[in-house]
Length: 398
Image (cartoon, rainbow, N blue to C red):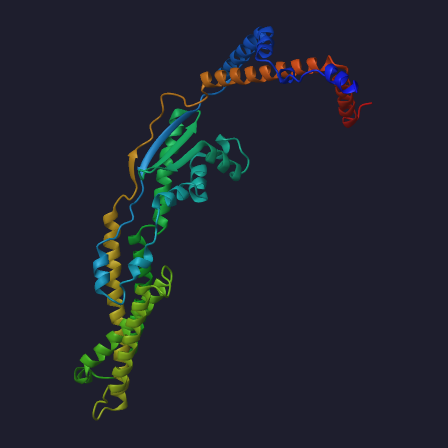
């Protein structure tokens, strides 16, 4: 019965502090290696500072500009008055964030290749392929749009003058690219109506030539029911214009949209009116086949003439709106040769090197102290021996 009491007397109470690392021990380790922790990082920082003086300085030039603002022009009122063509201006628009779009233009391959050819960047950057020159150019030029709507271009180079030239050249090449593209709403409308006007003009010329070959004299022309024929031709032209409007609206509206449904209703009404007009059109008394053929050709002529007039008005309005835009790219701050270098930042390099080396040395002495403490016990020494043998076998050493 005395055995449990003997065991209890021999047992030692558990002290959690035995398994913890004392703060005093850590401070002792730091104090023992204080010279190493101070002198080595300082020496590394001084060496990094000396190396930074050997690095060629880089200068950054900055330019800021305001991209073209997307806004409705004065043609919107005129388009609203023409029910058949009222939706074309909306179809031409649709740019939600022009700033991001112009940033993409500046980073496009067309602009980059133009800059590479202009400044011979393959030779300047010492690259063999244009793709490598584009990557270097992209790394040296930072383009970003701010919340204020301005786009900033930061161009870096070892020569201040070239950095400013490179930044300003981005805006110049962007202007050349925009001259080839229909970017603004007015430019898109002008391009659209230019194509429609060209087609309408060709059809009008053909209809006029056919009308001249009808063989009807000028007296028959005066006696024909011109007013009725013109009304029917204009109605037919209106139907064609309404069909073009619906085709354009499908690009930015769903078929369930109220505007789309209203346009469909208007087209159906116009088609019904056209069917009734053709059905109720009376035949001219005593009209011969020549007069009937003339009326058909004259109606076609008036149809293409009406289309040509509609498209001509819209084309002229688009040209006026486009000319009112003027210099769409407005430079706020042109790039100037920088007076101070942007990098390398010698003080920052020396400080970061000192801190990094100091932290690495502190970690090294703590690990070294832990390994020394573990080697003092037989059990830990045996484990470390087995661990060393495992590493040697993994490295192929006996």
